[in-house]
Length: 229
Image (tube, rainbow, N blue to C red):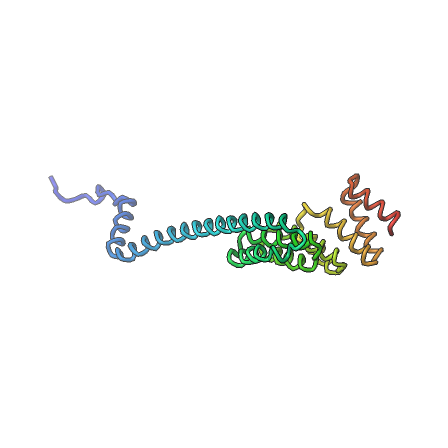
């Protein structure tokens, strides 16, 4: 009997086994690199978790500061409504400091809006417009930005700065966000009317009737076109 090997009987190496062996050899040759990558991945995951925790803590601290400032402001406002600006100076400073110390948080937006509302309610629409403008700059959220911009336009309207009001109302419309659209169109028509531009006011009232038929806004637009323009 021949003892010579029949090469046809020899099986080819298993492909998976071959690849596994190659991979293990690579690990052995590059063990330092593999360990470094593993450590880097762990640090990256840990760093991201730390970032999320810090961000969460920042938001919580910001809202706690906002709550305390609002609570103090409301209490002091009730005590001395006639000398409100003098007696609320410290509370106003707290809200302003919050906006700087906790920038890029939702609490910052609320702080600016609260300050704007405070001055608006007290008749200082110019000061209110400053804070409403800061509120628009403190958020990237479209609805929040537009809400603050609408308040800003209202402050400008009450300051008889109709051109600035119209500019901000147009920016709301250009954003494409729909929830404030009807109120924005009504405000836009009203500001054109107050500015003395009756043709543009009529154009906006026509747009309201076309886009929002059979609504209170449409009925108001019809009334204004008939009796005010």
